Image (tube, rainbow, N blue to C red; front, top):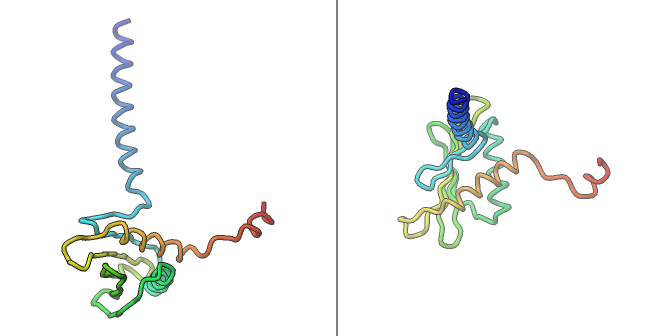
Length: 142
């Protein structure tokens, strides 16, 4: 009886460690990563597609683009909204993979705004996936 109980504890302990490992792995899949309030995401898209989607996202958010410039590995987009300076860096990793770095800084320069940086990435991802179907179109399919 004790052996069965100990085996059950051992099994449960193993299950817990597996569950924790799987939860940790799942938390990193398909998400945006942050380092010091700067958002990072890699898209399986060419740089030109990600740049276009980023411009759509900024327009949707009514963020005014001030400048774009070429870099050694891609492009940098500078934009501004009241109280915030935005910098987006697009880095071509391969012909079909582009890494995006989004940074929103308060005008004081000391405080970063991770929520705005994250929303720019989210809206870029939505633009890459295309517009959502209208309710009437979805109803006709259903």
